[in-house]
Length: 113
Image 1 (cartoon, one colour):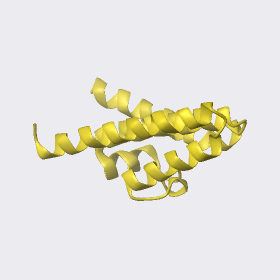
Image 2 (cartoon, rainbow, N blue to C red; image 1 turned 30 degrees about the vertical axis):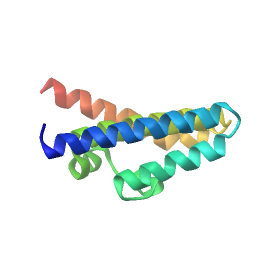
Image 3 (cartoon, helix red, strand yellow; image 1 turned 180 degrees about the vertical axis):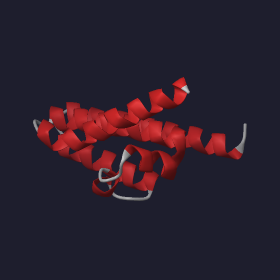
């Protein structure tokens, strides 16, 4: 396994663990703490705060981070939206959902080619 693949695998594992912990907090009534944990993990993993990431186009995300990390961000944004829904703030997650959906579509297009 190459260093790059190993790095991506570690990132995936770390974010998956954070997502699980954050969802656990949200489901136990601590939605804000879970959201903060997830948003911090996204900022740390992608080198910019979530509000900045949400301003990027799918093509920009793809070119900045590559396909593996774009897929990882898709999962994180989907979770972010779901957690906001659990907190009764679904409208706040509209941009997360929109970018996640657009990234998923971009990913599907790249696998077809």
